[in-house]
Length: 160
Image (cartoon, rainbow, N blue to C red; front, side, top):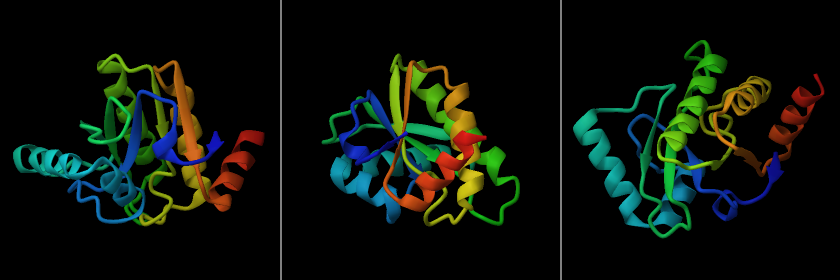
């Protein structure tokens, strides 16, 4: 776990906290999309146009555009109130890591998926983040956080 800027992580790819429509209009997704430039949103739109919305608990890959990564992996985490949020979040992150592995990427960094706009409680997120990171098939997985409440929840879960 690191406190930092996801866009500056020393990894092959970053994970984006996405919605099923891959409409990157708010939160981390907006920051990633703006920094990547229009190619990322154009490719996202094409994925949804041809394959339909991305289901919760899964992930897809797009170009990184202007970002210095090999790609951006869009993990669709759950919204609070959907039910079984911890399992769905774990599945979304593991799907993201699997997408990286399939492409030969060995390192990824992921943000606090589902803890912001999607309002999943921090303790639920922390359990899913750590479980997914431990189950990752990759050589290097970094949890890149900014906000102290999420960091505190992850640190508390690490102590268990």
